Length: 248
Image 1 (cartoon, rainbow, N blue to C red):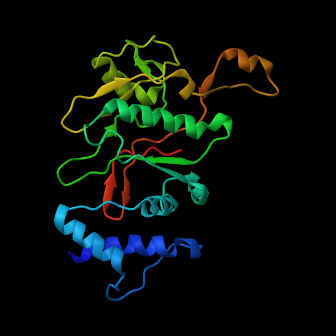
Image 2: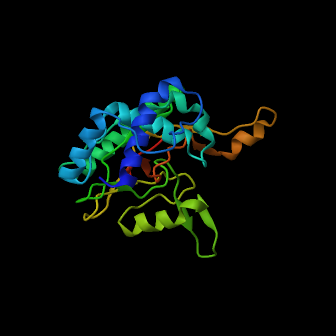
Image 3: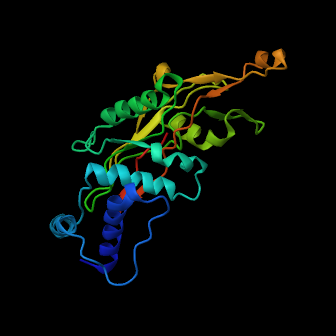
């Protein structure tokens, strides 16, 4: 096995083994790669046979926490110890079933919302393999409002989603043209046409925006979805890439 791949796999296993006992970032010792036992030999054999390997549930869960903690762009990573991980790697994987993926994504939203007691939740779907990339969603977040570009250059709705809105319109979706049209999820397996799925209302909790000192503010009718669920970041873990791993 190549030395760089061995380093990646060893680092993952080292993190998993030492994760419960450390408070700071894990720093592997310098020098030659140590022997790390039976698990490394299992990974090497699987890599030689298939070009990839399957991580255990423990490696997935603890490794995901470490990956989130080490993410330099996410301020929410301070809650990394409480991250829960759903293992969805087998959902729709064999037949490229977009409907099964959609149902699992809806479940993610319901579980993360948790009746208003929001949970930090990560759902990990099929990884990229040598013979087949993993699935993805076009949406940057699972819940976002459409943005409709007007003839005068203005935007009705969310200006950040104008490009995605125009893409789903070309795919046949028709919104109401309001400021708060929830965009459909665009789910795609590589080599297949994308499919659109409308989120059910109970999976889209919203917050009506008001002000304690200005009662008139509520009459503006402003609202926003209750929590973000990032869906366009790739989870890289132990040399594997998971292109669909929504977080929150």
